[in-house]
Image 1 (cartoon, rainbow, N blue to C red):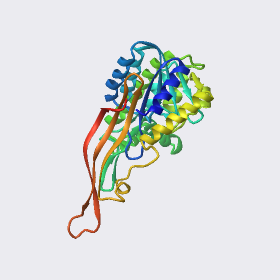
Image 2: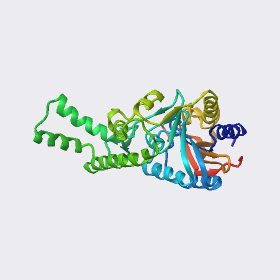
Image 3: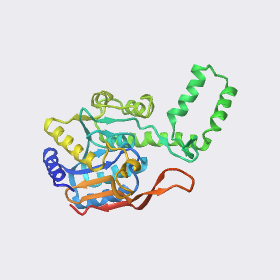
Length: 331
């Protein structure tokens, strides 16, 4: 871990009178990562090093991930502290927002965003599309399914039950009915989890209203909720003061550089000046002063190779040798 980061964590701990853990799942284009079950054990290592404490400040940057992993992480952190607060330097979307619901308070900047928590499932049973000769399944969301039937009923005027059944059968030609059922089941599960987690917050509005907005009323999974709207929604949010805001921005600049968040991954550009390159890309970070850093990395070799005889040009092979968590040698 860089000494600059260590100094930032020390200053934040002093300002917030807490112990700091930073958790980042990178969103570098074509090298995205997400909240996953394998993070739970890593959190456990940091928490064991910290020990029982009154308050933990979690610095969180993520586009989301596994809902149940999120639930387990929040519950695990709370086993080690009385109060949990979460700082969102830039984004904590989807399952990241669910994690924020489990905090006593959420600290945002003017650049921070939360987002809807409606489920979106990636499954081989989803709608198939062909991209560059590869068949891929698109994510399926509750709101997309609802939107389909609302369009049929209110825009096309289809109200007869037999016609609606035909509309469902038409949809099931594209999306497996089992997946539709699973998406609706997940929505119920997310609402239950959100209700349990919000018990830790002193909300200024009805928890049911908050959950309904986050699950469906926002209209789109891409909807961004900034500080002002989060406060109007009724969440217990706090705007970072000037000194904390400076530390948060400094932290983000360092992390953004380490994970190359603003530099889309493209093997072609990686091999502009050579025919091969060994690489190590950091994709997830978890930091604390007591434990140091554990990071999820991808390592391998990029290499230009000749195409088959008679075919012009070259292709690039990506020989990945390692992908997983490792302890950073520089504590």
